[in-house]
Each structure stands twice: as C-alpha cells, then as structure tokens.
Image 1 (cartoon, rainbow, N blue to C red):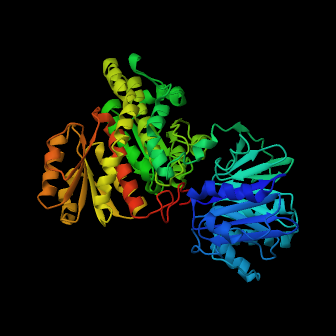
Image 2: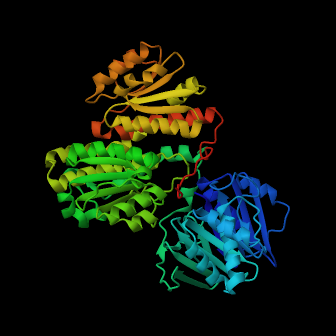
Image 3: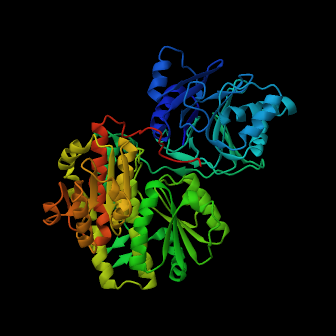
Length: 611
C-alpha cells in the first residue's frame, strides 16, 4: 500500500527521492518522510501529503548522494509525524522504510521491551529495525547478516530499505509479499515500489523476488535469498514512457484515464483478434489450449473493481464458452477450504498484479492442483510471475486511485478469453464468432462517441452533487456495471451508493426510494429491457429520480426517466464496455463539484498489498 523510493549513486538523492514519492503517492498519502546521509544520517518526516513534507524541509540542508523516502498508508498507528517513516533504531544509527505488515510484531516488541528497548511510534516497522539492532548487539553480526537473520524471525509481508550511519555507502533492500523494483544505472541504483519513479533515469530494472535481499553499493549489486544463497538477477527493459505518467493537459489523472479508454481497449485487442477470419489468438495462454478443452469449471478470484470485471466475465464465458463459472472475492476465497480439482481453471485478476489477497488465493489454488491464469496490467508484477499463464491488459499506467481504464481493459481481456475458450471447445460457430469480433472491433470508436456525452453528463452531475445516497440498478451483465458505478461514486465523492440487480430492488432497497433518492438504471435494449422498464416505473411510482443509461434512439424510457444518457447501439455482450463510461464521468464530475480529491480519495490506496 505504501510507496518506497531509494537511491545510491553520484547525483543528489533528495530530488530523485521526492519526485519518486510524488509518482508513488497514489499508493498512500497520509504521511511522508525521507532519510539522507551527508556526513550524518538525517531524517525528515511529516504527516500529510508529500507536498507537506516539501514545505517542511524547504529551509534545511538536503545534501547527500544516498537516500530513501516513504509515502504512507497507515496500518499500525494513526497518521502522525511520529508514526511516519523512516523509523530509527534505538541508537539512531539505522533507519528503515517499510511497506507491508509484520504480523508477529507484538510478540517481538514485548521481548524487546523486556530488554530495555524504547519505542517512539506505534508501528510494526519500528519494531523490525529495533530487532535488527538487537541482533547486532547480541551476536556481533555485521548489518547484512543481522538483517537477514531478523527477516527469518518475522511473519508477514514486507518491502524494506535500510540505511546505516556506519555504512554510508550501502542500501539494503528486501521483499516478501510486497513489490520492489531495482533500477540499474551506471554507477547508481534506484529502488521503488514500482517502476514509475525509475523510468526517468533508467530502463533497466530487476524485479526482486519474494525472500530476496539486495545489497546495493554505487558500483555493485549483490542479491541473496533468505537462506544466504547468492541469486543471479534477471535484468529486463521497461516498456514504459515518461509521458504516460503525466496528466497531459487534463485536470486530473482520473479524467485523463477515462479519456484514454478508446486507446487502452484497442491496445488490449491489438494482435489478438482477427474479425475477418473469426479468430482469437492469445499467445500468453496458447500452450494451455488442450487444457481449456477439458476443464470442468472456471473460478475467477479478484477484489474491488477487478471483481466486478470478473462478474462480467462470468456472463460472457458461460454464454459463449458454455463453461460453469464462479466469481469469488479473493479475500474470502483464501480463508475457506474451497473444493478445487486439477480440472479447474482459476483466473486471477489484478490491475497492479500485487494484490495481497489475490496472491494468497493463487497460492491456495496452486496447492490444490488447479491451473492458474492471470489478468494483469503491470509487466513484471508478482501475479504474472506466480501464475502458470495469462494475458496482459496493456492499459498503460493507471495513476488515479479509482480504477477506470483498468476495468474496461479487464472486461475486454475477459471477453477475448470467453471467445478464445469458445473457439477451442467448438462452442461457437465461425460465422457467429466473425459477427461478435466485428462488433468488438468497433468498440473503441463507440467509446469515443460515448465520451462526447461529457457535457450532458456534467449537467446531470450538478443536479445530484448534494445527494447523500444513490442506487445503481442493472440486469444481466449490466448488474456488475451497476456495482462498478456505485463503487466509483462512493470512492471519490463519498456519497453512499449501492448497486443491485434491478429485480432485487423489490426485496429491500425499494424501501429507501423517496423524492430525495436518485436511482441510476442501465436500461439498454437487450434481452431484459422490458423487465428493466417495469423497474423504472416502480421507482417513478414512489417519486424517485431516475437517471437512465439507454440505447441511442430509445423513446420509451426517455418518456418516463428524469434524465437520459444515450450510448451507441452495440451487441449485448459489449454493453458493459459502453455503459461504464457515463457512470465514470458522472462520478468524476460529482466528486469535483463537491470539492473532493478525485485522484487521491481519502483512506484509499491504489495497490492493496496488505491483508
């Protein structure tokens, strides 16, 4: 959840670290801090955003060519100056930054307290650096070995960087369950939670694996595993452009990413569909073609927006590939004792590829013999390296905390997987597949048309910006779209919103409807259109305000809804890709009108790498 940056080399460290923290602020933004070495070990930290830290240090000496920084999403201890990272050892000779959770910190802390250690914060992180210090004091081990031994004693997840006043030309980095990337330069190294702070300086990176420890000097990098065995690092080249990390003239990253969806959806399909031949080609799962012909069941595991994408995938896979699908919250799946066999396929979905609960669900399914596919946006992330095979979404970096283009990219990839499995199992005719792929190929242009509704949606947003509650209703594959629309609104505007299957309204939520309740319907002309029209009438009979997403040219709903947003005509399978767009814009404009920080909504973080 937190963001980590480190640098050792020949440049001033502070500008690199602080710029990196800005790039990683989507991972957490309740406090920030830096540690630098210039004749002595210095620490500056402050509750608030990275900009608050910058104001705090504007008049102090920030020299030094080695340093590290941290932007925090609180787990242990409230957001405050004293709980901010970096944290120091008792003798103030060691500093640490940490992303993750040390689950057994309480037991370790009690032991250290009994030995006279005094703690300045409420965090698990401070306990870890005191443990390193205690091991050094009791055993006489050097810092490298003391860190390794300490990590064998902790339970939980971590990505850490450690600096020492006694070894000012050394950074120690380690990971288990939390992401860490090392950038390789000439006479310099960079450390970060992801590649975004690094790409400006080098394209060559190493993705540290679980239970690996890296020892970095200006001219030397050594990686060992937790058992002290030297590892040979794999250096790969980043496929990431710096301009992808800027707003590009938009007021917010979220708006930019909404408008990037025609391109990101097109990039998802590029080289993968051949409409004129009725063919889907997915190189990432090609070697499992025979397996796909014989699977009994597909289980999709995901969290948040990715779970909503999985629900859309369930409708598509069952409809076209005729394979039973179950969609599970990864956070619940991992704590059950699910019945999984070797004839099951598990599809794990995660934008970041680092979601802790999804990673744990993968490991559980692997132990039970299932084949695991991943759907991920970040090349080199943990999930693509853990799964047997998979498909990248190619959506490009998503900086806004509330997911937009990642959702439509995931739905696009799931659509391709549905058609690919159907093709391999002979569940779809060639003529039908040609028809469907031809329509799918037109979706990017139709999304562009949907984006032209922005001004109209902005007017509707003004009408409902002061609402305190909102319902989102849909049927079939539009039900997950309703869930996603509700999530977007509550995430960034802090308006209480809920999504339901439209028919379920009568089983409880209808009690909430009155003259103050806006109800958003996805009411496109599909197989359940008539039923949704009836649901709209039920809401209007109770004086609710109806906002309807309808197919272009619809007159029936237009005659009864208070506000109508018309999206282009498309096949029923592809409605989620279009209907999502106005819901994203509606949430965005309402949040902006309410004065909310849409890119960094309160209490949230982009990548959930802790349980």
